[in-house]
Structure formats: C-alpha cells, structure tokens
Length: 278
Image (cartoon, rainbow, N blue to C red; front, side, top):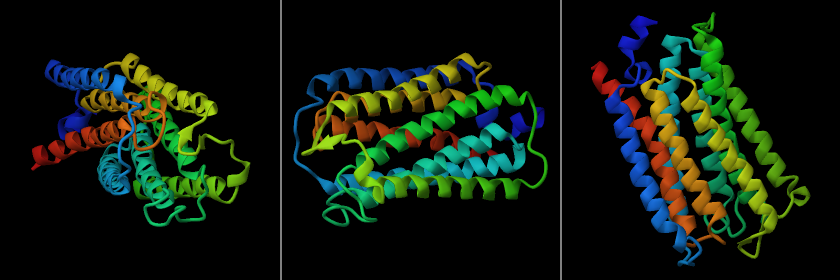
C-alpha cells in the first residue's frame, strides 16, 4: 500500500493544498450557479450543434478517464477503483447513446428508433447511474479494508467493460423498443410535473454520493476531486433539469457546461499523475 501511494498521486492522502484548490473551484462554481439561477428559464436560440459538440467532448473526456482508472486498477487491484472506472465508462457510453437519439442531431426524431421520451429518460438513467456507482466506490473503498482482487486484472477489466456495455444496451432497448410504456417527462419541449420527481431522485443520488465521499475519511486526492465532480453534477442537474423549464434555455446550456467541467476534473488530476510519473 505504501508503494502504491508513492506511485499514484491520485491515491495519495489529500493535503491542505489539495483541499483548498478543490474548495476554490467549488466556491467559484457556486457563485456562478447562484448568478445563473434567476435566468435559468430564459429561452435561447436552439443550437443542436452545441449538443453534438458537448456530448462528443464529454464522451472523450470520460472515456480517457476510464482508461486511466482501469490502468491504475491493473496495478492497485482495488475493487473500488474498478467500480469507479466502470462508472466513467458508463457515462461515456451514455453520452454517445444520448447524442445519437437526440432529436435534430443526426435525424429529426433521433436514431436507434428513438421516441419523444427517449433522450429525457436516457438523461435520467445517465445522471442517476453515475452517482450511484460513485456511491458504490465510496462504500466499497471502506468495505475493502485493504483487500484486493486476486487473479487476472485483465479478465476483471474485460468483465467490467462487458457488464457496462450490456447494461447500457438494456437501458437503450427499454427507452426505444419499449418507448410507449414510459411515463411522459417531456411534452411539447417542456417538462411535465412528473419530470421534477424523477430528476429530483437523480439529484439526491448525486448528493448521497457527495456525502458518502465526505464522511469516509481519510480522503485521497482522487476522493477530493470526486467531491468537486459531484458538486458540479448537482449544479448541472439543478440548472438543466430542475430550475429551467425547457430545452435550449439558459439553464439547459449552462447546466451542460457544468457537466463538461465535471468530466474534466478527475481527468486533469490523472493526467498530472502521468506527467509526474515521467
């Protein structure tokens, strides 16, 4: 364990400097969020190209993050790290599928047999699934108590990748082939009352993941920046699905900018790790 902490900056105990940097990022994000709240429902010009660019950047960031976390798992053999890597892979695939089914990007109604409720339900699955896996990472890290996966790490990685792909395929089938059975969350481009209840559950999962990361000490550098990520997810979901009223308003755009920032924090830490190793 000691050698591992010397190898990976992301698994080293967080210092005061790490915490202050993370707190500064969250503070600035919170101030900008507070400034944006009164204007969240203001309609803006629909720009489908923004969604395509955002989803592409998000998928690339999350995919690279997943690869880096899988590579660290191959050395550390931490079950918690494997679950977190799977979480980032899940978000990468979800972002791709969400973009493919988004109306007006690649087809007027979206690809893959998408219906009017497909993308909004994919958003809920996406933004509820990732914090659930982060919550699992936090709990599993404590439960492991130093235990590591035995056997082939390559097999464990392949199994995780297959499991994530199968899960995402199943969710995609549900929101496309079984579309007519889904409750209506979006009607005429505006959110229905049911939408608030569903998205609030996703928001609460992000809050639960944040609380779990906070109470399970000591914190590593990775833990600290995951807390920043979950704060950004709280701002993202609030602006783009709770405080706004429809697609392509101020909250819709700003929330997705928070989402892109969230996808960059852990990636930046991991890239710094790699530079440090050189």
